[in-house]
Amino acid sequence: MPAIALPPVPHWTSIEPTGEKLEWAELEVIDLARAKTTEGRTEQVEKARNAMHNQGFFYVVNHGLDKAQVERIFDIAAVPFEQVGSEEKKHFEARIKETGSFMGYKPLQYWHIANGVRDRIEHYNFNRNVNSKPHPDALRPFLPEIQEFVRHNHMNVLHEVARLLTLGLELPEETLVNIHNYEERITHILPATTRRRKQTGNVWMKGHEDQTSLSILYSQPISALQIRDVDSKWRWVKHIENALVINCGRTLEMLSGGYYRSAIHRVVQPPQDQRGNRRLGVFYFCYADDDVQLEPLSASPVLQRVGIKRRMEEGKAPLSGPWREAYIAAYGTSELEKGAEEGIEEEELHGIRVKHYN
Image (cartoon, rainbow, N blue to C red; front, top):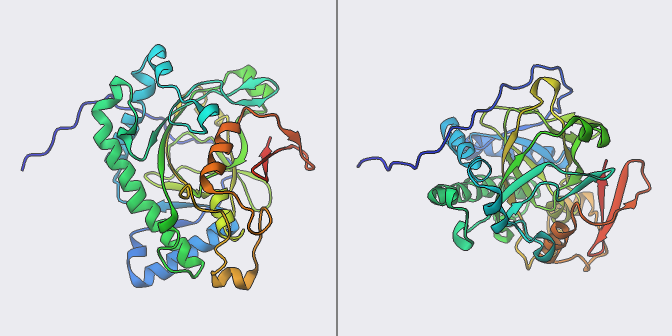
């Protein structure tokens, strides 16, 4: 049977990884191929549980896509930014504040970073059903591939990681899988000017916790992502070719009764040898189903042994859908209060205190 010809797309050429000596975070590596064996699965469950409990971050390898397939996805990811004009982008701009949704374009300079400076981050977002909304003309030939990419991330990556983390809580394997929806985001980050770097302390996106359960980043060579490590120091996340970087968000932290750590992370100016280059990212975000109340999974024997930590009183946790929409609508646009800790600002959403780290 002849191979199906894929629509042509310009190749996105990235740069070499940085040669500078940076303080890298030491993150665990989860091997999904090894997790398919009996012995390996026990090992990977322990690794995933400990990593998410201590740091809230880990790498994933052998996720089912080879290097050429991932490069093709990055080629497609550049299309909404390289091949769509500014007027057409406005037609597909997301109504973030009104809807609490990122579907479509998030324009440049929408979020406030610091000292009156706004972001230089542009991204284009898909729903899990890519045909649920119209898209720019240049993207339409690639929708079947994007839909398959969404399916792969949900079925072959998120499901597998969710199962490992569920087993880490000593719960039935499908517990987290059964309560999770998903959506996909492609993100494009433009380089900041010198003036912006000085006014924001080289921060492109201030320290925060994702509102997701799990977030997946396809590793790319330009160093900009940092995590606030267990000792509260900011450390760089190193690029590993064809690996995924997965982090825990607030939703999973609440569901796990604080056992899995919602990872604080930020995006900063790249090291000197990589500046002046655009940073293209491909992300996949997983949210709990809209009607899931974000109460701890108290049946977990692990939580029964170590205790449950809550962000709010028992029985008063919000539903996932309203919580997600409130966070998205407020992020980067709301008035923040000075927190008790130096360099931290706060706001309250659905009764939960949300911190932003400068």
